Amino acid sequence: MSLELDPTRTALVAIDIMKRVFSWESHPHPVQEVVTRTARLADAFRRAGGFVVFVRVAFSSDEKDALDPVTDPPSPLLLPRALAQEPEDWSDILPELGSHPTDHLITKHQWGAFFGTDLDLQLRRRKIDTIVLCGISTNIGVETTAREAYQHGYNQIFATDAMNAYSDEEHQHTCTYILPRMGRIRSTDEIVAALSGKR
Image 1 (cartoon, rainbow, N blue to C red):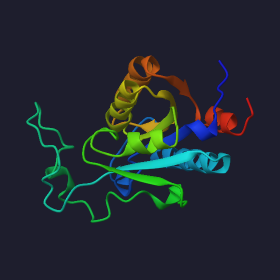
Image 2 (tube, rainbow, N blue to C red):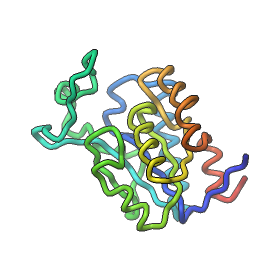
Image 3 (cartoon, helix red, strand yellow):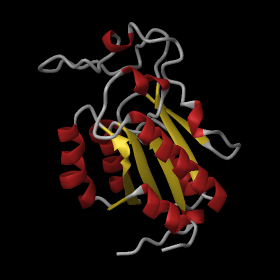
Image 4 (cartoon, rainbow, N blue to C red):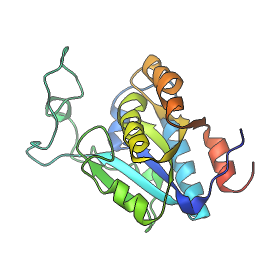
């Protein structure tokens, strides 16, 4: 099925493409390819007049706004243990993604980008009903945001070649069994072509 997008009603939501993504291994794509494809999507959205949202995770200096549940086994992702050795700018959005005055930055304090943020408000104020999701990691920040978007009633397109997870298995499971039940799987090339009116 060909992809048709109205840029005025579509937003790019890029999850956690932060400086920290270079500090750990992710799959199945080289992380620089994920960054390059995300930057390409952002540029295409800006040219077409679409809305670009960058999402990052960050916490207060005492990290008391970070989730730290008891898990079995203990998760290496949990705070404050995971961030003890990180540089101060670990949560900064990568400069390769560029910047534009109309871009919007969301700071979340958990996996999903909707809970406790103004993301839904910003999208609805702009009459956006469709989001393109990409980012890291596929089965955590992206999948959780996708589930939240689904429950908010948004149409979704998933740029799975601009996503990575901690393992190939985690990425493939989400892309095969979860995301197709909430939206459409497309490549960066297909999304860029749809934004430019070339299908």
